[in-house]
Length: 262
Image (cartoon, rainbow, N blue to C red):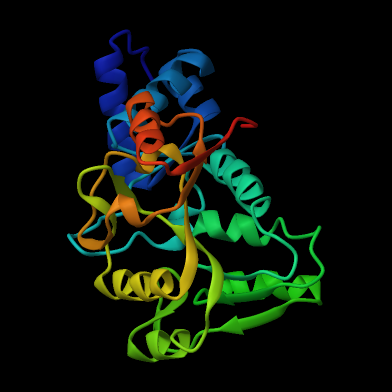
C-alpha cells in the first residue's frame, strides 16, 4: 500500500479499516501504511482523544454502537484504560479495614479492588456483580453476599426491585461505587436507569461512599442520575484528573486519592 504522508488521510484510512474489520494492529498498520510504529501509535492516540476508537494492547478496536441509555458491554470496558484501573483498584483496596462490611458495585474498576484483598482475613463483601463474586471466592475466607435480581447481561450484574430489597437489610461501612460519569455540576451518573436505582440504594445503606474511576470519566454526563457530588465522601482516581476538579473537590472537603503508579 502506498505511503500516506498526510496524517489526516492516514487516520481516515485507519478508521475505514476499523469499520471493515473492527480491530487494527500497530505493526500491521506500520507495514501497510509504510510509516513507523511510533507514528501509528500517535495516530491511534489522537483518534482515541476524539472518541473515535478504543485503544487496546498492540492496537485499537472499533467503538461499540451505543444508543442513549444503553450500556457498553463489560468485555469492551475491560479493554479500556487497564493500567489506570489496576492502579486505582490498589489504592481503593488500601482504604478498607479488617472486619469491614463493604459493597463492591459492578464495574471493571471495582473488579480490580476485588483482586487486591490479599492482606485481609475477615471481610463481609456485598456485590451485585457475578464476576466480582467469583473473583472473591478465590480467597476462601470472606463472607460474600451476592444480591439477587434481574441479570443485566452487559455488566453481568443484578438490578431491579429484588436487588434493592435484598440490599436494604444490610448496614455497611463502605461503598465502592464504580462511576461511568462524574460531573461537578450535574453529579454522578450512569447509562442505565436500573443501575442508578441500585446505586442510590447502595449509598443509602452505607456510612461512606467512595467513588472509584479512571480520569477519563470526569466532566461527562450519562443518561441516569445517581447522586450529586456532595454525597460522595472520597474519590479514587489516576493522575489524569483535571486540576480544576482537584481544587473543587478539596473545597468540598471530599477526600481525594490519586494513583500515580501507572
